[in-house]
Length: 391
Image 1 (tube, rainbow, N blue to C red):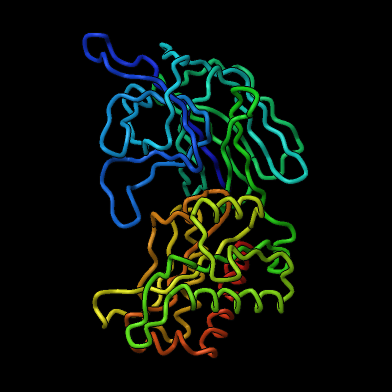
Image 2: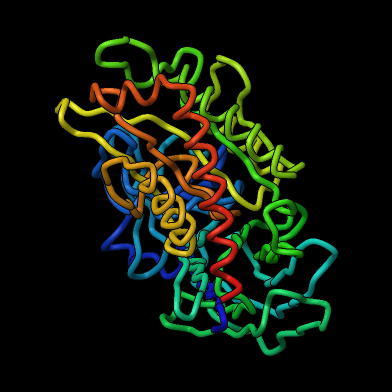
């Protein structure tokens, strides 16, 4: 089965007639991890995120709430952004349309690339699809004037590339991959130009556990204690670090040399700081470890969480192995709005190992023998995930 990547492009174009809309201003994205929100709803993890964006992208602001701006992406598409993620740019002028130019598709020693020449840094949205696997990136505000897509033979993951124009001001690029499994992609603009870059991560070769670059995140830490044990009063941050260190030991004993820990001690790390470290390490897999909690002391068991559908197979393989320990099943949870599940650059999954709020689970969590078993099952889950790609 072949995999595919799709990309779409649009901006604040034919904005609105003067008599319909007189109050708007132009700005650019700023700060760490600027992102678009679908709406104004939120839960404990914040609002439902549409996508993360690069910095310095043109944004058309049409309305304001207490904490967010409403932004116009195209003729029919709106979103919201945190006010801290947008800065006003008095020199930026809204244009009636934006045109794409030529594309280039090529590879280097590490990645494959699709480069699209635009006349402005336009906002975009990224979505994965499966069967066939596709990445759909909607970049709002562009109309195609692309008449050449030059594709070089040094690509290793990209099979085909083409575009569609589903709306007058939405340009969609489609990138077909050679493998079913999504290994991640990264979207950004060339710092010195308006060239949009879609960097596609290749499947590791050889595809073995030892060859993988594996990142481990011990949830919480420092001033963020997390959940609390129902009888022991131990903090989640203490035991997630113990589980993480045991997993690191288990992986290294199995011959994995490239292991990265987001933290190795009880320290306070923000989510942007963790993401920065992960992006620099460039993992093939991220496993984030947490301990669950509930107001009901009867709730117990293990759950795995993912955000993007292309990364679900990893979370499923991990859950299957964790259930072999005799834990109750909390479930496999998708579209999870957790910051470390947000990057689409690499396969990632969060494991809620058990419930600190349940006496039976709490007893297991505090057992060194159980931590060793969990590390072994997580490693086996990664191995089974890899093996399934060869079938």
